[in-house]
Image 1 (cartoon, helix red, strand yellow):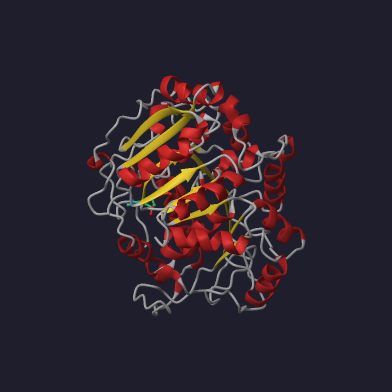
Image 2 (image 1 turned 135 degrees about the horizontal axis):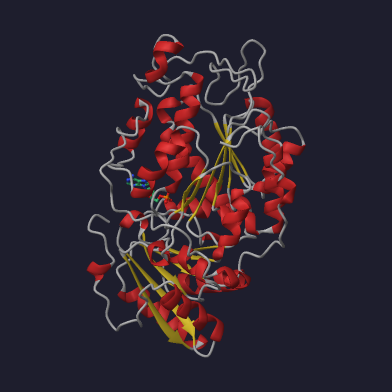
Length: 487
Ligand code: AMP
């Protein structure tokens, strides 16, 4: 836990240039930097159960509802620390359950702190059913923390106050884009469903009218948990609409991406400064260069570090990866061939620019593929609508820029195609990690342009430096190698 006693000069952090969504080529320099420390992140299970982790009944119930049977290895390693307020810097391969670590860690501490779990009911007062119908939820008791000022009688919307104490935000979660913010928001709601009377969650991101956010905060009060992109969150903090003076938990998801970009990093610094020094800081990413790891560490005090030294471990072993060299003019034909031949549930196709996303999407629709496309400058309402529709299986094919290359979890995606090769090893690892979620089977195929040395270089690094097997695309791929039985 970061605390008051040690001097912490956040200003010591330098800022970087902001980068465009489609251009990850400049990250190439970091492409081979994820080589630190111990092996980890395998989704082999240890003998720990969620019950062993001493989670409160409300969370255990939501976990069961989510169909989670056992914690993943990274969850088994990080959750015990997350639950007791330890700072955590966690690198683990894509799709191994990092989100649940901070979501469960924060929810458990928050409800224990507020005395709203049935397991803390002996000290917090009598039990009663929550609005969600949970028989294990307790009637909220009054918070003793003057800093927090939380009124535990607040509803999910947090619209009442008690003893004139203003309710303040307890947890801030920052991430690099709106879709991920939205996804994390959904995860907090999923796991807090039996804690509804006591925990309120708000999501804030750009591209929507900030007045709507101001109005919401004015009418509903401060949420316990704020999930946001750095720009909009900082704006609301500066306007004193979001009040972070009682924050106890500070989380950055996809931390290397968030802290690498100039604009985001300085926004994060300012948000961080507006929170108390004594708080738990947790950061997560699948990729973490040495340089960024150093930057992350400056936000923390003696964190538990879970980092991957073996880059092979950055991709789940159930993901089959292939590459094929093609001329630019051969790519579309190959793609159509693959979409015809492959048995996919949902497929994500990555391209290098908005124009290419739009053009390819149009073309696929003309060929009767149920396709949708995404890029950063798309109208915000439309962005979230398309993202949600894809998650809800209303489209089978998503053509996207790098924007959806990281953090995004769409469980039915079992095929990823790099129509345009990723510009860096890191981006490659993130993109292919959209398939093979939580050790399900998956397939990733990358098109590498004939004669393009940069693209070839990325593939070579993936093959040699990371030691990941990416053979040449065979004529036939056995569907059993990438189709999950229950899909
Ligand atoms: P994440 O890496 O947090 O994006 O999670 C990847 C996927 O794994 C998500 O669909 C989660 O809902 C799922 N997941 C996380 N933890 C578990 C678990 N212990 N058991 C089963 N699925 C899980």
